[in-house]
Length: 121
Image 1 (cartoon, rainbow, N blue to C red):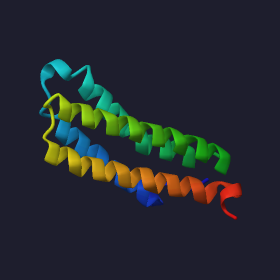
Image 2 (image 1 turned 180 degrees about the vertical axis):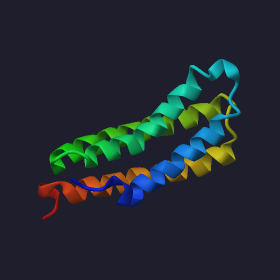
Image 3 (image 1 turned 120 degrees about the vertical axis):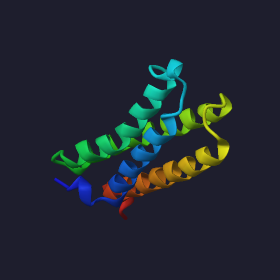
């Protein structure tokens, strides 16, 4: 079992959740149960899946949850782009969020690679 709080990628994804909550606070009330909720769920899913995977008993299970975290990060990236297209989020703010998401995607991918036995060679 790995300690998720020690992983920089988990810490960075927690920071991203805070940014996402701040960014979506100004979304219209009509989006509260739509895009706002979906964006927040995707963001929260990233560190949550990293933590759950670390709490499992094997690298294989951890890798499975890291892939889920990757999916959530990709989903979040898409939702941020949609937010810009709909005029809900300024492009400049979105660009900073997208940089953070892409950094997390790279970090999770690297962690997966380091855990996969066939990729360690």
